[in-house]
Image (cartoon, rainbow, N blue to C red):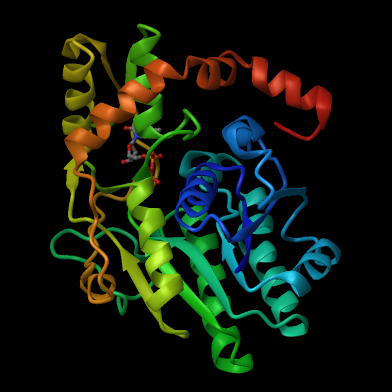
Amino acid sequence: MKLLITGGAGFGGTNFIKYILAKYPAWQITNLDKLTYAGNLNNLQDITDNPNYHFVRGDIADAEIVNKLLPNIDIVINYAAETHVDRSILDPDAFMQSNIIGTYTLLEGLKKNPVQRFIQISTDEVFGSITTGEFSEESPFKPNSPYAAAKASADLLCRAYYQTYQLPIIITHSCNYYGPYQYPEKLIPLLITNLLADQKIPIYGQGDNIREWIHTNDHASAIATIIEKGQVGETYNIGTGDRCDNLTMAKLILQLLNKDESYINYIADRPGHDWRYAINNDKIKALGWQPQIELTPGITNLIQWYQDNKWWWQPIKSGEYLNYYNQQYGNKK
Ligand code: TYD
């Protein structure tokens, strides 16, 4: 099986590539990644020499490179995206370009170069916020941030290209994921790395916003299940039911690191901040998938990972990593 993973030097893509190479050692992986600020080849150091892994630096919005790679591919998994809500509020441009035009370029590429499956990695944030109950695969899109609107737009393009051109597309909507190699601007790695550096942790508003969490290994196994058993033209929610508010998450991490609540710094809320995400996972469970990693042991092991891998995150936090890559490639902000 030949896979094209887009955005494979980012957090989700990195963890998926490692999961696949371990589970299906004969599968061949091409990783197409633009290496934006969040793409980091250090993530992949341990597999660079694997003969079944091949890195190509490039943009999914570049039709030339897409059309060059696709003829040799069976399955495309589109992890490439700008994903940080706060950045999308400050500067939405890159989100429109990568998330919408990038996905559109891949879909156009599929018309010329047929593949067996195209799996769109998307988010529960396309549904907006839900006060009680759960989003299903049929819930309407009501995105509240430029990021979520750009992902929703890409998902709608995927749907249209399935309906109009019968391309073999499957769309997935995942809850928030956590795991190794997550850029330390997102809540969980930000909290852990700040506390490991003995710094305070910023919590928006009262910290009562609720998120549903999945470990990257469980997300990767969900995508592997969809590759094996998912139906073309369908949408699958990927969730665990593990929901907690941000303050509870902060207190868990503080407790695991033996720190008290004086480290919490309550700051002004994010504009348009979604209050609660919760998704129903019955449909993917019916394919035989189950999440394996519960939240508390998952976070406990993750803290250990950040403790053991300071080489990875300290240069990112200090700016040293960005300076290095700007010298090498000159395109990171
Ligand atoms: P984030 O990791 O940015 O993911 P998303 O907004 O896509 O769900 O944020 C998770 C939650 O944590 C969200 O409710 C916003 C909150 N948050 C903070 O309270 N402080 C922070 O510094 C960050 C980055 C997020």
